[in-house]
Length: 182
Image (tube, rainbow, N blue to C red; front, top):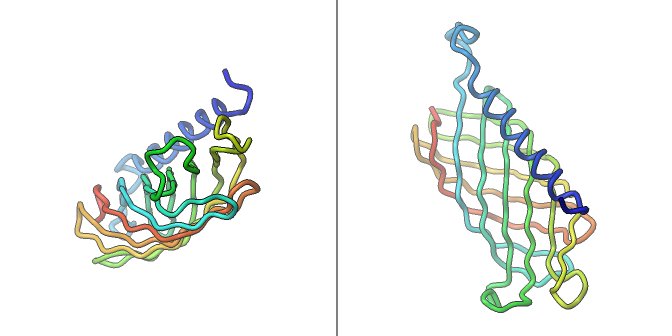
């Protein structure tokens, strides 16, 4: 077990994911009224353009599990950010984030708009100047997005950021989403 809290963060993320999935699987007997909003669940894969304070990073990728019920949005987000100019080289700066988000959503028959904030673990390579060591910190992830969906597939544009003490970042991501989005 590592002493930097990585195992603890992993357990927290697994518990948060379990809570999200449990909340999405509420028995039908409890949701008996027709006026209750449908639960929307998706997995999104995205590409990002990004800027990071104190680190040379310009692009990245994201994976997000989202659950929406009524006006509430829950999400688990993972991001990998790197420098495209030196991506295959050892020593290119990299930033990773794993976090849980909570927010509000407005849905229509063709899409949604949401804002969310949360708590995340951020890891930054090269903290010692030689790239032999990564350092981590706790961050506050932010997201505002708009998406177009048709039942099981959707596209979304997200403005995102993360406030933390090692490498604050922000940017835009475009993602493809697959799931149940009635």
